[in-house]
Length: 150
Image (tube, rainbow, N blue to C red; front, side):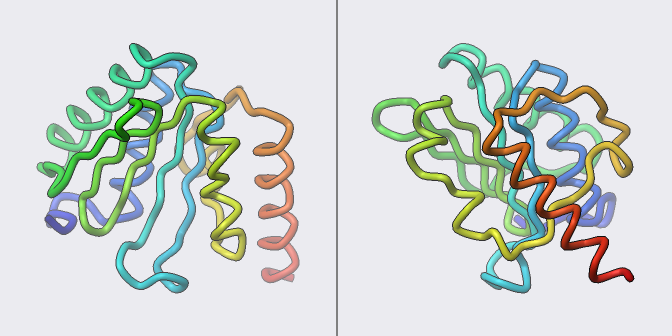
């Protein structure tokens, strides 16, 4: 299902990030991958500390997008070991990992040329918790965005 007329894909991705934050997800990132992969506009990537938190994050994202954007996932998938969950909304894809699985796959690094949405300014999400690796990626993305704007 593509993004509804209620929300742009960017607004939906930011709503998903806010929902993940409401369940205390860590390492929340929104990457604008559309120009690189063409099958979706945004990846929302977050980490839960345990499987119960992952489930809560996924449930919160589904509820938020249903209520604010009238969206339901076209596809929902959970890895066989339960360490990675995915919600596919067409124009946005939400990934929620356990820390060791996120570190292993490094999905955000595969698309490191993708612009990173500044969640502090666009979603008013401040004080988010980041691992050193993800913080470095976000800071690198901010530097690239500033150099492009200059």
